[in-house]
Every structure is written in C-alpha cells, then in structure tokens.
Image 1: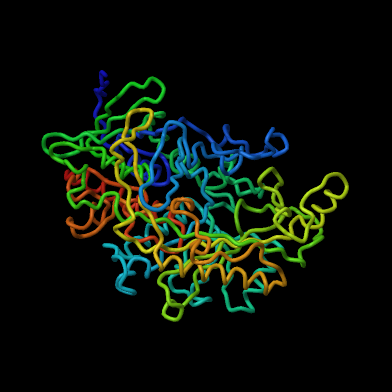
Image 2: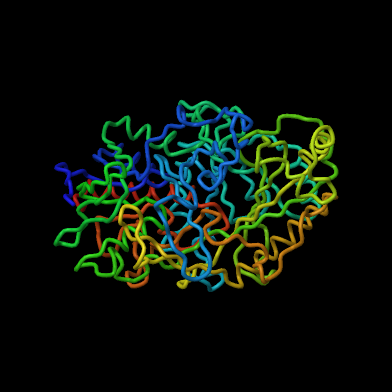
Amino acid sequence: MQIIRSPKVYDVCIVGSGAGGGTVARVLTEAGADVVMLEGGPMWDSATDSAMFAWNYESPTRGWGGDLKPFGVYDGCLGGWDIEGEPYTVGTGAWRWFRGRMLGGRTHHWGRISLRFGPDDFRRKSIDGLGDDWPISYDDLKPYYDRLDEFVGIFGTNHARETGLHNEPDGIFMPPPAPRAHELLIKKACDRMGIPVVPARLSILTRPHNGRPACHYCGQCGRGCSTHSNFSSVSVMLPPALATGRLTIVANAMAREVTVGADGLATGVSYIDTGSLQEHQVRARIVVLAASCCESARLLLNSKSTLFPNGLANSSGVVGRYLTDSTGLSVRGFIPALQDLPRYNSDGTGGMHLYVPWWGDNKALGFPRGYHIELGGGFGMPGYGFGSGIETYPQSQGGGYGVALKEEYRRYYGAFVSFAGRGEQVAREDCYCEIDPDVVDKWGIPVLRFHHTWSEHERLQAKHMQETFRAIIEEMGGTPIGDMPGPEQDYGLAAGGVIIHEAGAVRMGNDPKTSALNRYCQAHDVRNLFVADGGPFVSQADKNLTWTIMALAWRTAEYIAEERRNGDL
C-alpha cells in the first residue's frame, strides 16, 4: 500500500484528544507550538451531539444501550469494552478494556470525580515496602493541581485539617451542592461509626466560570454536557487550543506506530484513515502519546525497528508491565426509612454530592493501601436496566403488571442506597499487556494480550469493603441485598479493567534500566518522545486518576515548551 506522507513538519504530534492530550494541546499551542492531534474516532461536540435532554422512554429500548452503549443508549462515549473489529485477547486471569473512540475520548464518560493524589501516594514503597516510589513528589505536582482547580473549576471543601486525613490534600474549590436525602442518612450512620463523610470533589461548575455557565442539575453528565458546565476535553481544553490557530485535529486517524529516523529520534506517527483505509504518515519534531495507558503501550510495542527491536523506548523491557486498575465492588441495600419518601428532584449534579475518603489505619487492618467510597441512591431517571432495582429485593413482589406493579414501584422507588469502593492495587510486574503474535484488528494492527490477576492484598481490601458497606447499611436500619461473596469469588471484586482506571504500563522513574520515562514523562531512550496519560503512573492510589493525568500532562507540556525555547528539543 502506498503511504501518504505529510509534506509539513509540525512542531508536535499528539496522539489522543482526551484528558492528557487536550491538556498538552492547550499548553503547547498557547506557548507557540504548531500542533497536530490524531484522534482515532470521529469529531464530537457535546453542545450539538449529546442527548442531554432526551427521556429514556423516548428510546425503543427504554434507555438500555447493550454492548455498544454499556452505560445507556444516550451515554456520551462512543466505544465500550467490546468494539467491532478491534479485538484484544486475555492470557492470564481476566481483563476488560474500555475504549472511547471520539474527540475527547473518555472525558465524555467519566464521573468527574477529581481527586488529587496525596503526599503518601508518591512514596508508598517508603511507607510499606511494596512497589516503587515515584521519581516526583506531591510538591512537584501541587502547582499543577492548583492551576487545574482554577482553570477547569471544581466543587468541594478543604477538609484535610478537619478530618485529620493528611493524604487528602486541600485545593481551590467552588461551593459544593447540598446533600440529597439518602446521602444525609448515610452520613448520620457513618458519623456514629467514626467513618468520615465529606462533600465530593467533582469538576462540575456550581458558579459561572471562564465563560461557562453553572450546572443546572439535570443529572445527566454522562451524556455530554451541552452547556459545557462539567469538564470534558472538548468543552474546556480544546477550545482555547483551537482559538490560537495552531492546532490541527485529524479525526478517524488510528495510530499504528511511531516512526523513527536513523538517529533514533521520533520523526512522526503512521496512522490509518479509518474511512479510506489509506495509511498516512504525519511528521513532527516531537511526539506525545496520550492515547490512554494501554493504547500508548500498544503503540510503543508495535513501533519495532532494528534500533528498537523490543519496541520503542523499551530498552528496559518494562513497557506494558506493572499494569494496574482500581479495585472495585458495589453493595446495595434496602432502607425502610426511605420508603414512601415524598417525591422531589434529587438529580443534582451527575454524580455524588458526598463521598468517603480513605480513613483506615493499614497497620491495624492487615492489608496495604486503601479505597474511597462512592455513594448512590435517590430518584434516578427510570429506564430499562436503570430503574429502581426493586426486582433485586426479595421482600418485594418484583413483577406483575397494572395497579399492583405501580404501587410496588411507588413504595420502593428511591428506597435503595449503594456503596461503590474504588481502591488501590499494588503494582506488580506479572500484571501486564503485550502484543498478541497472532491477532490483528480490522486495520491490520497487532492487538494487545492482557495478563492480570488480583493478589491477596486486593482480596483483603475487598473483604474490608464488603464488611464495611454492609455494616453501614445495617446501621441505617436497612438490609444488604445479596449474600457476601467469599474468597473464592475475590469477595466480589470486578475484573481488572472494569473500573476503567488502568495505569502504569509506561512507567516513569530515575533509572533507565527499570523505567521507560524520566520524571518529566520523557522517554529515556528517545528524547523527543513523551507520554501524557495514565501510562507513566508508578502506583495507583485510592483516588480516581484523571486529575493526576492532567496535572502530569500540564507539567510535561511546560517542560516541552521550556526545552523548545532553550533549543534542546
């Protein structure tokens, strides 16, 4: 096949348009760089393309999206765990890989939970002897967390001093929304149990900010916000980058490999136009991979040459290794006190208004690391697969039709709460992704094969989650739904990848023999190659990743800009 080579040489080529890619694009274009961005999916604008105000009953499936829309037919993210023509394989254990194929990537899907990693999260090996410390500290990232808070907008409160939780750093917050009824009941129970419940930290505006209006509390953040009141790369990072006139976006461009010259430096990226199936090569002086942790690892491993026989930037052999995901499981409970509650609009923001940060003492608990708790309940919009869940409660009739069924729903609607734990997996070398030697996608690009298992550390953490969630439900006077899974079921842990917090497969470090990137997310082996997604993470933390992905990306982009000014890149 003839390869079409771009005659233009850009300053920077970014692969991926999500949290990391959008942040790098904004910083570098405003610093004067001429940037081209490759996106594997189509263009998408939440202002015009979202179904923010559609009712589930308007859908033939009543809101159910099937495999192509696992979070509902109106969900803003195009993609999923299984995409036709884009397979992946699993060798050891279990793994599911969620991918967003659209401009903005998974920033249209995520829950906007915007938690800073704390000081301890960068030095876990020094604390418990497991895994590795990061080559940077919280103080290195704090200025970028602050800039994110100020530029993007985030609600919450500074509760570190009040709660004594030093690993939950304070930030720059807008006022949080008021708690809902079920959240207040949960807080009362947790207060009696000594479990802290504090305002959530979500990147959703509660006040007008930088030309974007405040959230109007429709509760449909996952569909794509047509008013740009919540964070997505398309709403916040890409508009100022485009306004400079120095950003070119190439959509439907599936990256195949990073090209290199005889001097071992990156020269650009080869990609397949998914419409014409024609291969193109875009040329650039600097390449930034922000395609998501596993996709960036796949690109590097597929970029083989005589100079890099094990894949680009992989002389250490760690690309693909130390793959982690957040631990995760959920428990639901029936709360009689919430029965027949007067109906009110409990939508609020598209996520929780209160949450539980990690409060435990690992020395007393017998397992390392921790988790936070995400709270659920209220009068969510009913729809097939997204209803009140009364069919899961054995005391209800759970069926029927007509008047009896309506009365059943009126009685139990809103009377359930849920607790979702999201915790830290300890990074291990034997959790990894590699290139499957026998399988390619529909564009002929070799796919990933995953190997991932949970250790006893994560299983004991899951056991603690199960026991804690059930104890809170009982303290509320309620009944947990379902029996507690045992160790043979990993205490109910979701398979790796299901929580969609994958990280670590292109790790950073000071030693080129044990890491792929340096402290600025610059490849040890290729000085004009950088990674700006979850790949550089050395450890997972008990927090969601996006705020740290963007803080790291901002820091990396400023380093690139400075190196360009000095003539070193």
